[in-house]
Length: 422
Image 1 (cartoon, one colour):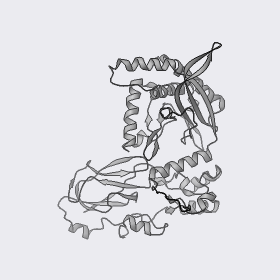
Image 2 (cartoon, rainbow, N blue to C red):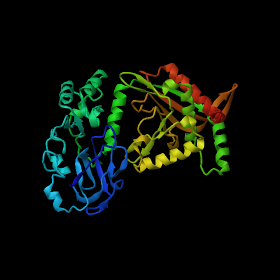
Image 3 (tube, rainbow, N blue to C red):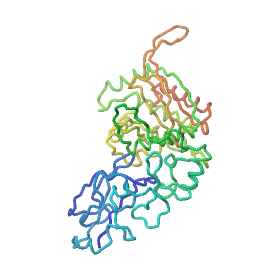
Image 4 (cartoon, helix red, strand yellow):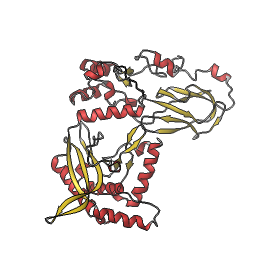
């Protein structure tokens, strides 16, 4: 009997994705474990493995199709000995209720309250928001949000497959309405005033980043602490390490920063945390999220157990994670989680900046460039290599004294790099 191949949920919050590429053609034999398609989410492109064996009898969703709902049939697998006639005799390729599987274009032409394909009794509706983002929300959540003037696209759902439920909307309201629709969002399309322009459609990743940034700046009480680190010893130490060249790697200043942050978090574990409405979670492991720029926006792959790793190991991991992040080849566990983030713009010549916290984390360190500056040492003005670092803190979890204590510990490792090897 023909078996439906369904759009997989590649993360707990995924509700839809893009079928980027078919790796098998109609008529090809498929074995369990074979890679059959590439699925693109808002942060990564992942390969889909076959669970069953058979022949790919029919492709229902063409590659390149966006907005394919989780659990929607995307293809049909014929079992051993079955021909294409079996497709006509079975309901494979249609939802359980017998309805026709709709193409992506047909879905877009339907009203936004249409039921998701393949789900005859949905617990949520697909809602089209003013920002053009389709989200899953329960009818009750939708009504409460509408009454409160809340924009659903600004809410991360905690229900099945990331659906927005009543509790999510009520939490947003209690936090001051992170998703509230402002005048600009309600004003409709922006007039072009006769000016020439080129429109670049927002990718799923860019939309996700926008929602997260709005959430962060609307709901997290940020405050900022800046410290200047003298890095002359660090630069000399780095030069001596890289000058050897026998290990096959080149350690960067950023690798030292990751290690210094990790060791400082061991000393000040209050900063290695995430916020929830019920409790603050302090993590046993030190997992550092490192901001990486990609053509579609920032992503934060994670260096796990960074406090326990050698500088050379950190260097190799960061290079590998950054390369795969730009190619959208990261695994879920490689960019989801982490207890602390680092954003380094020093290589772009930025002297100092303040970064936006990556929720639910409570701290992010913004690192500026190392440069020669006049400083006073023992009453005399000398030229030293200095680097400004700004810590953004969530005041709900990290008080000023805790943030200052972390920066002091971080500074001590940066200015005396040999301590990182002890």
